[in-house]
Image (tube, rainbow, N blue to C red; front, side, top):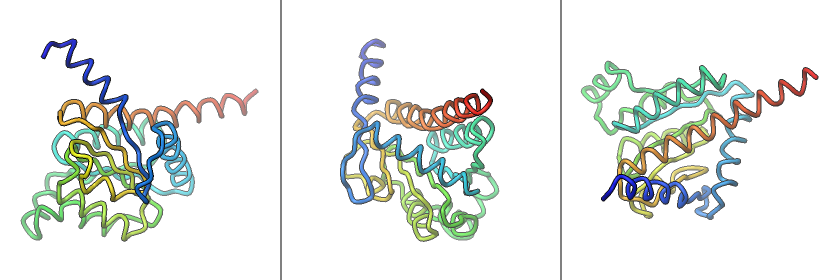
Length: 197
């Protein structure tokens, strides 16, 4: 593959993102992103937080976005990527429970859980998403690879990248999450400017 070919495939992946709701009904990408923005605005306006979970690069995306969401977006946002937390839960319970356990402890009803997994098959992410649902969280999933991946049916909104390339899926997940926070930042700035006229 050439570098131009790689970028062309990345653009195709971004353009092919599929969004489904909790009932498996397909919605347009624009509608799905607008729904996600509405969820984030509504829930953070009543003091709820945003939680990110992911493994490896998806964990890095979660850390990056949690920082952007609170520092730039003014939303309380956290991850559960602390080394002591990960190793203690893995040792004392099991690695599949590394997100389930802190979500059970720290999630409040109405929090937003962003569950990120390129394959959509990681057991710890699936269990984390299920824990979020049990705790009354608004769950938004980001997945890729196979269209029948298990994570794709776990959220109120499910953003799926139809690509088998880790790089394409990961970059697209980051772009989608940035779209959400940057849209919120822009809308708040516009509302603030309008109120000062």
